[in-house]
Image 1 (spheres, rainbow, N blue to C red):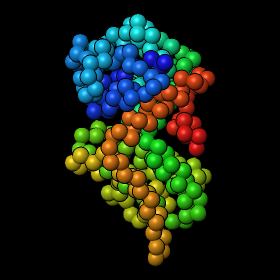
Image 2 (image 1 turned 90 degrees about the horizontal axis):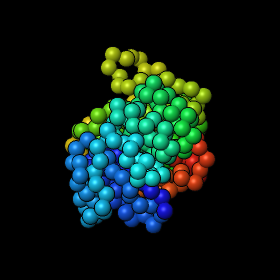
Image 3 (image 1 turned 135 degrees about the horizontal axis):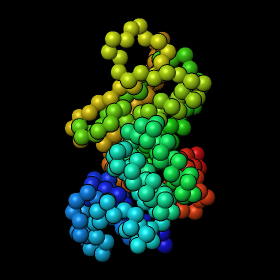
Image 4 (image 1 turned 90 degrees about the vertical axis):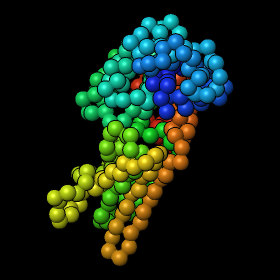
Length: 263
């Protein structure tokens, strides 16, 4: 049985992850952290009844991880928090699932080094949906045949999302750029004319949109649109738990959802 801990357990994603952990036959929740609601049962926020796991202060992360004998820590919080908490978990010998987006290159370097020094295993991905990762494979193949087309990425999320463009949009741009041997990106097009061969990225923040991503390949007299739409955050939570079950069987290192899914 895998002992799992969750950061941000009272939030939208954290509570869904807790719910999915309770549905797993191979994993059990042993610790939950947040910045408030200390002492309350984590099952209350996941609507799964009393789990006997109290919400702990994230300031006590290292102590609680060790006392609970956690094997894995799942983190879908914020970049500023992840860059502090991931190294603490790695030093404690706890494997990591990181779904936080908006990490700067400097923050990512700190996390990567901590994972290496701690000799733990980690999956780091901007999107844990199975469908999105298949979407990445499809746009990679399309780009190889449509290299001369104009390429635009349009992403839409709810009005409370903090980072823009989304991590998934940036990963889509990376996938296409790698397939074409390197292309520059531009976020938005204000004051840019005429269009070059760069990949354009555009963000929409409105209402309660879970997450839509469209890649547009436009040529003369035709266009192809490849789109993924998330209808529920459950797809991300399910993917994170699947990744957690997988990573605990792997050698130390940093992995992606491509590795998890065998793509």
